[in-house]
Amino acid sequence: MTPTVDQRRKNASVLLQAARETLPGRPFTVGGQTLTRSITKTAEKIWVDDPANGKRRDLGLEDDHAFWSWAAVETLRLTGSRVEELLEISHHSLIQYRLPTTGEIVPLLQIVPSKTDEERLLVVSPEADVLSTVIRRIRQPNGTVPLVPVYDRYECVWWPPSPVLFQRRFPSTAVTIRSVTSTDAR
Image 1: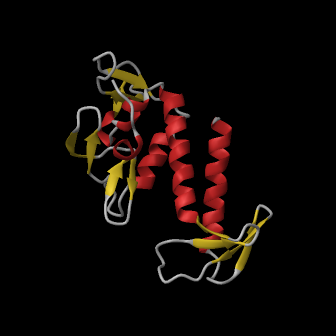
Image 2: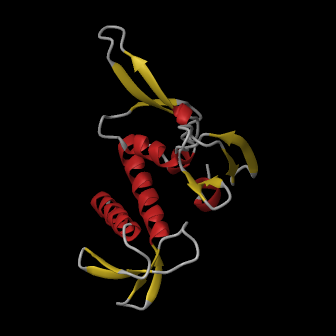
Image 3: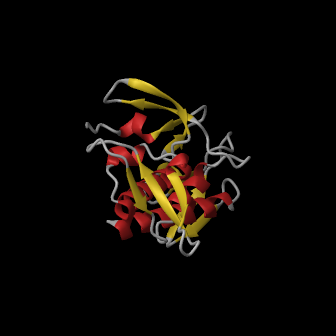
């Protein structure tokens, strides 16, 4: 599954970038697929018309879905965290520990208590750059990670705003993926 979600993410990103570089009303070809950049009234969304099936596609939305699918799969795979834990990872969960003997910095991921009611510290492998990629994606222009409220469906309560990593932007607000898609129970 990992190569599939990674390829889907890369393809969606390339397609979106090509559409951004194309003037509205003009065709472009990427990966043997010819699309026409739609003429729209808003510059916020990148729409294309697909002559192969006659449908209009929102490439920004496709890119967003592909990115978050990849980010979730990679984070789960590389950290061994559970879905519930993944949705609670915040910017504060990333810790740097300096080894006293060598001075080397070891990145750690703090997992809040869940199934076992015990906090865990996981060593983040160097190949787990997915978390830094997520941070770059959600970071605001001023460099901060947005604080967003999180709805806990299990306990039916809203948590105070926090810098959770798995958040999605919608036109007027940011919400966590947990509040939208998670149905997990403890």
